[in-house]
Picture 1 (tube, helix red, strand yellow):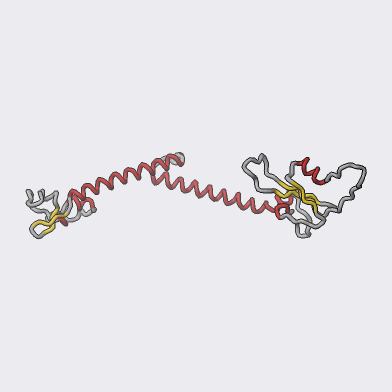
Picture 2: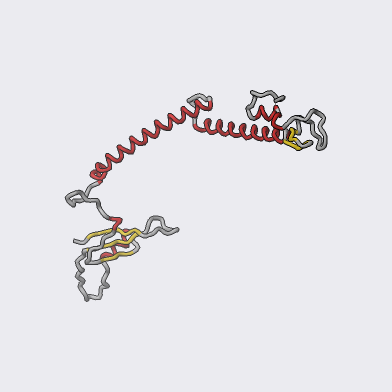
Amino acid sequence: MARLQILELPEGANDDRPPFILVVDESVPQRVVLGGGNPVRDYWQDIADKIGACGVIVSPETIDIPANDVPLDTNGNPLFMQDVRALDGPRLAAERTDIASDMDRLAKRKRELTDALGMDRTRDWDDIRNAARGLRKERDAQAEAIERVRNLHRPVEHQGITICAECSAWDGHTTDNSPCGYEHCPTLRALNGDTEHSPEE
């Protein structure tokens, strides 16, 4: 008995639907009555035209189209859709379990972030992102301010020693204040978190 199959073709830019070819394999050659003056019509081509196929391939041989393969059970019988769903059941159940676990981990992570940011746990992810962006902007501004202070309290050489330009009121040649050794600059010590030693040391 002839088998009917569909061979889908690549879709073109102007195609309303994917083009396809009607494939008829394991077909018995047709008998055509000649004579009578009537033109001989191709039965399968007429069917292809009616269903909107681009063409038809008719062959007595078996033509296997991989895209049309039907899943088989252990006995070699075709599986129906409900059978395929039954086989996928355990996999889908595992995926649902994974999704639930992922949601739990995401909720825990959100609680950790809101607690770290000092925010209400009911805030959404947009609020968390905006808070983090604000902290980063504040951090960058503080880093720029600290860099300006460090540049102001820069080390300079004066009479063979390294002093703090700002604390010593150095004008490029002399100091208005008593020279302050660079390692004793109280401002830089405060920036470095060193408050245990007095500036006189």
